[in-house]
Length: 196
Image (cartoon, rainbow, N blue to C red; front, side, top):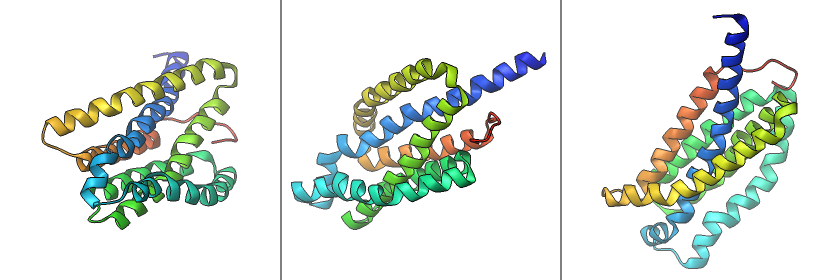
């Protein structure tokens, strides 16, 4: 294989591994919301409490925690922070799927929001930094895959439930997928440059 061909394959793999994060994020993050009625029933929660656990507290904590973490990415590079975010997302979703009570489930969701900020937002930033002349095309692909993820979420959850599973199984599957994405991101050759 020629050097040009090798570099072309490297660039293709790097770009698509990061773009795939958009699909995975929308697919996985939709699970708690699509499964909210079953989650509420599992923990015997009031509607208001369910809203606070699913959205209120995680959003509030992420607003406080994410900015300092983004500053660390400027100092240590995007790649390690992306990997940390994806692993945190994976572990948080698995913990949420195994949660014995609403408190553990809420803590898992709180942990997942900064994980998403690091793993997803920084993946997008790294992608745009790596290909400044192709930002429009890459953002179009990012948006398209995110929409596909949104569409797949209810289908995935319905399929799991028809097979005898529940929202717990969906969250565990999502968590494992995030961990696999972290492995793929760690293994793919990254474009060199000051941002990485």
